[in-house]
Image 1 (spheres, rainbow, N blue to C red):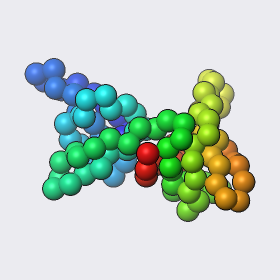
Image 2: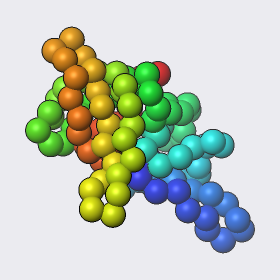
Image 3: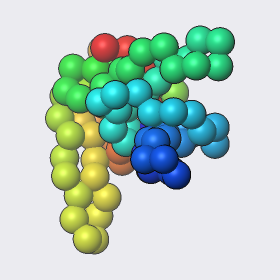
Image 4: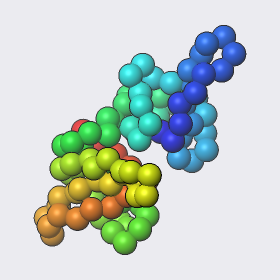
Length: 102
């Protein structure tokens, strides 16, 4: 989920990384992932410690692993995520990661 916003009628909508827009799932937050079936949101995968993720941009592109820690950013640097897999531990920017499993 890239963005969550409110439209006319106080209805929450979510914008996904592919540009699609659909009604928001209760409890959804930015950086969570949505499982879609028949063009409707089916379930929510939370962006949290312990979640399985896939790195789709940056130096560690195509690596997967478990989120160990989410490191808050500052005005100068973006938020990062520490990921562990069978080859070790690494950090990357939050925007480079998508959650693929609980």
